[in-house]
Amino acid sequence: MDYTHAILLALLQGLTEFLPISSSAHLVLMPRLFGWVDQGLAFDVALHVGTLVAVVGYFRREVAALLSAWIRSITRRQFDAEAKFAWLVLLATLPAALAGLLWSGMIETLLRSPLVIAVTTIVFGLLLGWADRYCRHWRDEHSVGVKDALLIGLAQAVSLIPGTSRSGITMTMGLALGLSRSAAARFSFLMSIPIIILAGGYEGLKLVEEAAPVDWYALLLGTTVSAASAFLCIHFFLRLIERVGMMPFVIYRLLLGGVLLWMFA
Image (cartoon, rainbow, N blue to C red; front, side, top):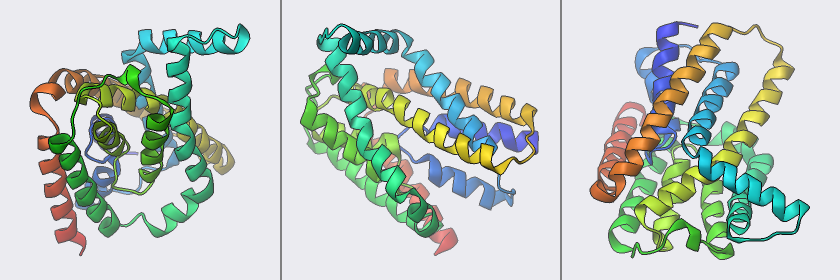
């Protein structure tokens, strides 16, 4: 694999995985624009590992506290606020996990086209703009209840459709339920951890079955660059989101969707 391509794709993955702008739209657009060959399954797994390292590293204190509370809730039956929140994060993961098991093959076959990605990029961008502009944002992430977690989880399941943006649609649902921008973003990032683990593990199993030759240097490079760019992306996004709001990302999504329609319609 060309190492320049590896760096650029890893940067793209790291920057777009946690912004509400659809990583799949970008990963479809860049190789087609420049005529690059498919990067392969092993590299996709490496990028997932990189983004997982970033989000766990950034929220390391929260993750450690939630994991400890979750274990206590099982081993000692201690069900405090941290344990409840940990279970809600896992509950929000279930719809996407089930949908992935049932329909991932159909989605990859029927819906992974530039036109579908263009339409979903635009439609879900408009929904994000509506939720940001017209819904009240007064709750923090620790106010999330079972109903909220299920609804945000169902939104995450819809993000299996390429172009939707996992972070975008989960933040949209969080905003619609009254979460503040930073609270919606933080809950979205925390609930990404189990789903990235599941998705990366699933792709890793497929990789083992393929038994194809692996360029380990390219994988290490992709993982490192993806992790670093995703970490910086999370940091600056959370610092800026209350000031700038979602509208810059909405405008960007509309422009990106328009470019995809122009190129592939």
